[in-house]
Image (cartoon, rainbow, N blue to C red; front, side, top):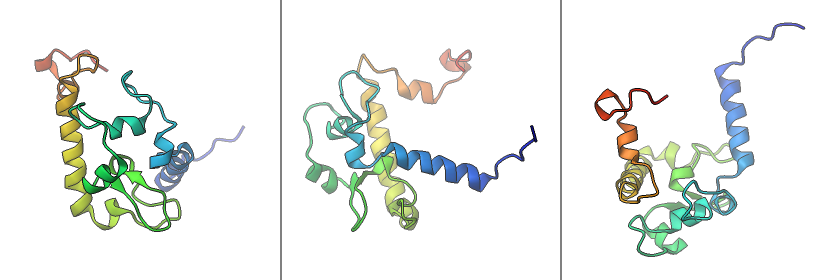
Length: 141
């Protein structure tokens, strides 16, 4: 058996994105992807639930909040699952307007992390992010 040369960085990325698109993290695809939390049946349901857990939002609410991204001729995506490029190679908001997408995505993630620490069924994600000996997590791999 011949030794194969290691895959190039470009090939690794191409293969990873191919698998990612096959898994379908589009807005419609999130409906069939399970959520880690037992409270939500799918990732789509997770994002429809407002961060405080008080109400269910509509797709129009998500669009108004800048969380649901629609582009003509493309699948819709929640900003957290938006790829850098659509399947056809055209750039998404994360690529052509990172000054818009970046701060909004950071706000979404910070809010979700802050609210997750109030849910007794969810690990203290903020603590895990800052894992280290001072947090008693030196053994965590």
